[in-house]
Length: 322
Image (tube, rainbow, N blue to C red):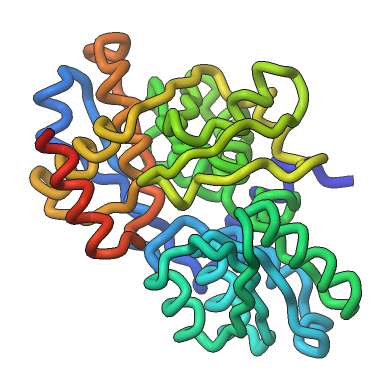
């Protein structure tokens, strides 16, 4: 039976050319300010504006021809839904996306624009996931999990392969963590290909379910509060395969406040001329908070997405000035 690392290597080849390799760009501003060598993994420049195209494309690829007959169902806070909608569109597979009611209208509109059917569920992200799974089982359709699926995790893990190829001398990589698919996949690849690289998970203080679960030694429910990092918000699905993976690959953990996230988003806008969403700001803020530990070292930050509503981004800029 193939290991997760084997699946990641297969995905690294299999998702091309539908999913390009994202660039790794040096940030002169952050490098100078933080006294370390800072590189930015530009997932926000990927198709649909998020790393989620990786796992989505890989899952649709693995499902193959049978998915064209049945279509697929998924759940999303926005970015995963767009990724599945795009992958389905390219492969000729019908897609239905279940979203929580608080999902931003811009992300809902983007999912619809790619031809997917949208179903809005009252409640949070976990409620949308559970309803999507129920309907997938009832209708006999494959469920494309946003993180709780090894094919999805393997697709996200291709980011780790790219980092190892682009910068084999990295001392650390900072990754915003929600359900654990991205850090689990990328961390698995890095542990094999660049074991010297520390994998740092970063959370907004307002949404720390995976972090709290890691501390508890089991998946638990914890309070959730509004956060700029809506892409990483929400509870972790019970029994998620990502929990055990995260236990193995995360070396360090950091939490950041909403003002810190806002200031990080502003800094990327001012210094790099890029608009990034709150989850990307979380990773940048994690580096800024712990920068003194990495003085003189080479570090990467994953800018995981750019899909932020204009009013939310403007609100973040205002918060950053307070």
